[in-house]
Amino acid sequence: MRIPGFGDSLSELHGPRQVVLVSCRHGGKDGIIAVAWHMPTSFRPPLYAVSIGKPRFSHGMIKDSGAFCVNFISDDQKDMMLRCGTTSGRKVDKFAEFKIGKEECAKIDCPKIKGAIGFAECRVVGSVETGDHTIFIGEVLKSGLKGGGKRIYHIEGSRFL
Image 1: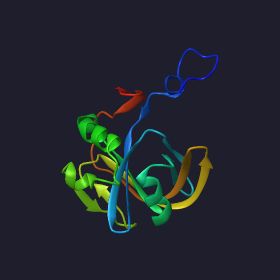
Image 2: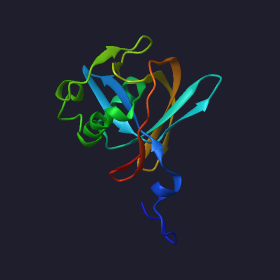
Image 3: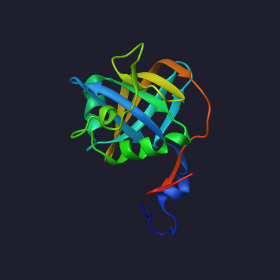
């Protein structure tokens, strides 16, 4: 997105941003969306926010279910992230289609990615509509770090670090 009067894009000004996969469940369907707009927002209580575009299939699933899981992934999972970020869950079960291992979250009715290096299980406690996105604020009910590894950072378009 270009800002009038600036030569650089907004993404380049505030990036790069770590990419996570957000998983969700509603109506008997499981979903995954790649997200670069996310952040912790509070220590007490522990809150984490994700910004999801309103037209996205996962947006409706999170809004209706009131839960999501933030899955932190390593750079060796970049192909999985790209497939999840460029395919709509309206037409495809991404877990099945891309052979992504999943396990059940302990505190919310939601899957998490089995091979993720970390996770945060979140119950939605608020939301803010911000133009074409909604920021979902989740109370972190359980989190964990399973392993290390380099992370994936989004710069702009199809450019990553």
